[in-house]
Amino acid sequence: MCDRFDLTVSVPDGYWDDTPEAGVPLSVRWEHPSDDFGLYVYDDHGKQVASSAGTADPEATVIPRASGTYHVVVVPYDVRGGSFTGPVRPRLPGGAGLRGLRHP
Image (cartoon, rainbow, N blue to C red; front, top):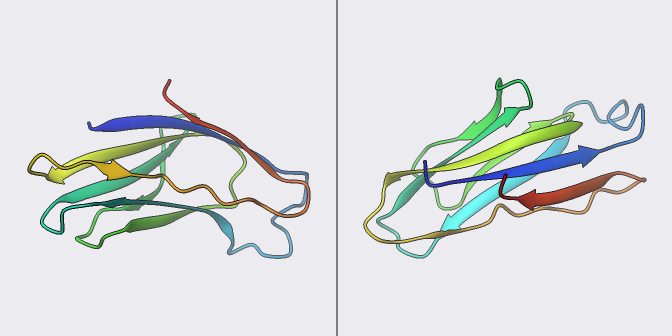
């Protein structure tokens, strides 16, 4: 494992009702084109809820209908000394909030 961050999403009841396909986007990118990282997201019970593990830079995914605490894991797949930046956190409209992307 390369790195792990905890993310808490706090949304009002019914927040996702009008846009059920929506969620919280996350992405990681890296400096060296030959490097490759994977991005995985787990809920607080350890179930994988989102991922991006191709060869794209950036790796990007969405936590669907996010609410609660998530563990964001970035894994080196083919890395030769490089590092990544991210995850990127958007601001959510309408009274929703994101708390911390922090190391546990």
